[in-house]
Length: 184
Image 1 (spheres, rainbow, N blue to C red):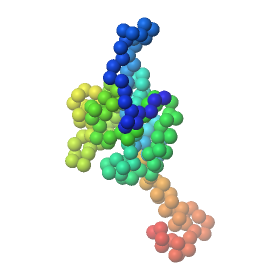
Image 2: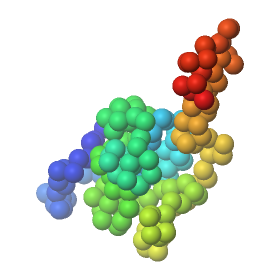
Image 3: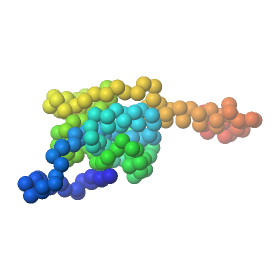
Image 4: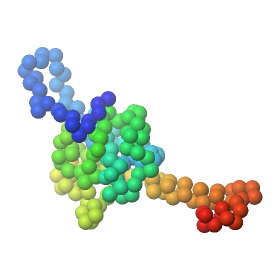
C-alpha cells in the first residue's frame, strides 16, 4: 500500500541496465477520484470497476475544503474518508488532497495511464466539464454509475427519518407541542 501526499516525490527515471533481475512487465495504472463521503455501494462498485481495468489503482480523495467549495460541506472529515478507503481491497494507492478539477498533471502525479469516472460527469462553476481535458486527451474511461444510490440521497433519507422520528410518527406518544415546533 502506497500513500501519495502533496510532498511525495517520485524518481524521474530508473536505470534498468544496472539491474539484472528486473521483471520487465509494466503495470497498467488507473486513477479514480472523489469525495467518497458516506461510503455506499455506488462508491464500492465504481472502485471495483476501475480496478478491473488496471493492475494498480490510485484513488484520489478530495479535501474537505475543495468539496465544500465545489459541492457542499462533507459529512465525514477527510481523515475519516481516508480511513475507509485504505481498507478497500481494490485500492492500491491513495492520492491525498486530489484536485476537484482534474488535469493531465494530476494523472502524471499519480503516475496513472488513464482516469476512470462514472457516466454522471460533473461540471465546474463555469459549466465546463471537469473531465473534458482528459476526455480530449483520450485518457478518460467511462464506467456505469450505480443507479438509485448517492450520498445526496442518503443524506436526504437520514434527514427525513430524523424529522419523522422527532415529530412523533415513529414514537409512541410523540413529542409535546413545544418540542414538535422545533422540528417542523
